[in-house]
Length: 387
Image 1 (cartoon, rainbow, N blue to C red):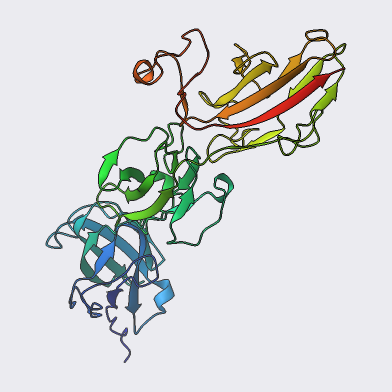
Image 2 (cartoon, rainbow, N blue to C red):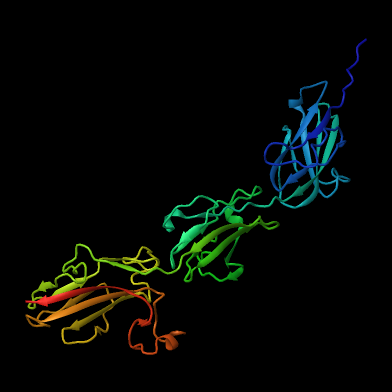
């Protein structure tokens, strides 16, 4: 006499996710059966995969049917609602964006209709992002190592970037908020360009018009948490006297000034030209594509003095790097001196701007640039005898 074998129900449990997409805290959960588990795992926000592990004495586990459920907060009614996934696969992929507790459950069914179930309670947390602050080396005169103080000349633009900041719960750093702060000592100051007013909030461009020690601070944040602050210290040097450089330019000035005067023809035009100026924040030609030459109110001022004059006379309106003396402006045998001064932004200001009236009382208000007579400037003088 024969009888059909008695079918045994399968067994199943849910394996705790441990595949690098998530981390566990409070110890690894204990593998249990039918919802029996140890410490509920703490999973980070984002995509993960729950894995069902099933056994069946009567058939291969590959032939079992897996049906998955998900519930917020509690496992008490995990199997009451409609299932989210059904098929012949054991993994259940789910994107956990809501913080707090959740429960995932699975029911496995064998070919004869016998079932087994298991569930796993867990909590979802958000991980804080990490701020990464670097200096765009293409914008600064010297390259420094991370953590070192950046030494900048006055008025020099430098760009910092937080593009390398990361969020372990998000692949796209563009979803982060970039919070920039600029400090003069311990005082928070406003800095146009930090953050970048364009579509790149991870960029911060600074330029300082006064010497001192400044701190640039970056904090990045997602919708729930923010990173620890990171900082870059910038040391801005005091203003340096500019140095006019005249090289391979005709006529070239005598060096030193007491050398014999230049012998120039009075019947032709003679152009006096400065080839470049070495200055901390206002060099010529400009090294900053965002600041065309001259960087107002920095610029050149030209003078001349005839042999009968007791002092130099300013050539009004001449503020460029060159000055052309027209032909026959002077006669043969006459002697003059041509002088060019270069003033940077520390020694100059625009007319009719705050502070100009007090500092530049004798300033010509029709001029493009006003200069303080008691402040330093660097100059070159050409002594000329016409023939």
